[in-house]
Amino acid sequence: MKAIHSISLIGRLALMAALVLGLILWIMQIGAISVHISSVLNTILRDIHQLLGVSGAILLIALGVVAMLRPGARSWAAAGILYAFVFPAFGLLQETLLLGGLHWLVQIVHLLLGIGAMYLAREIERRYQRLIQDVEGGIVPVATATPPLGSQRATN
Image (cartoon, rainbow, N blue to C red):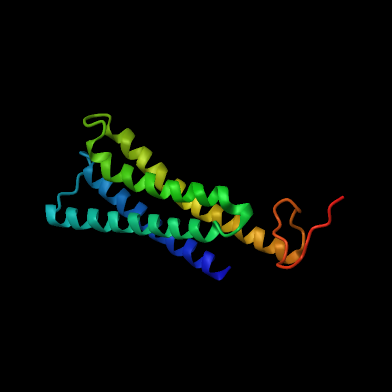
């Protein structure tokens, strides 16, 4: 249970840092508030943003793989693994989508996908921990509980 919490926490922190850097990059592009910095610094910030986003996606995949081991968490785990491939791909392709005056819509979708990844990581962790507590407390429904090895279920 500590591993799932650690993976989720580190992944969400990486994604939050990517979000902050993304917002900084976005603000630096606004014409009225435009901050003139060297293209080298802009490239470095963008690379760090991408590295943090990909790190968050990899940790979301790891979280999904660990959660796949619990029958009640498999749907959320599969969603997390799929999502971990979608949102970084969208981020890498966003510069080619809807160029011009409406590009801010693409940036908002990318921002929302990043926030969704943080939420999904937390939700997978929360549901996994609830399943563990339910199994330890003996209140798991029979349909989702895995019987101990060597035991047989009684048939009526």
